[in-house]
Length: 170
Image 1 (cartoon, one colour):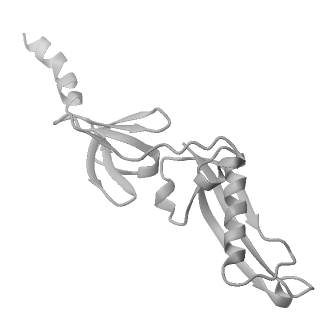
Image 2: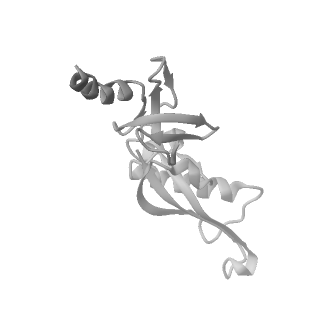
Image 3: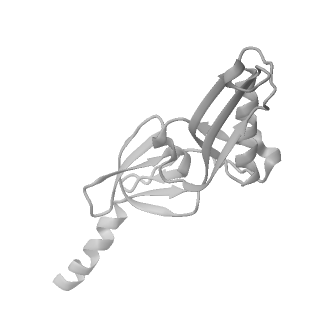
């Protein structure tokens, strides 16, 4: 009888574990400690070290004790450059934890641009998103955002906006 109980203990313990289901199909068994605005802090089953995942990487959480299922985020499907408007740009590194790095990309406006307000920003954002979408990536982590004006930009005195980032997917 003792041997049977000893064999059942791991199953009973894992039955209490929370299951974090990621958008890429992977599941993580552990204990959800807290849910912040953009991240989920958890421990792996049988460990004490705290880990972090971006909410964007997570589809849902099934809580082991109650069985309650919490939907976290909807999956963003980007099938090509035409889906560029779906791409999300992040400036905070914690938002990409748990996502897969694909490639460095950039978006820039032309060398001869005479724009007002934030037109250059919008154009470079669009080009950055289009570059990510062409790779099938729904996320960009912004690594550089640079604007130049007048003689610093080009010989004609226009302005240029250059944004660099890293494309990520599930």
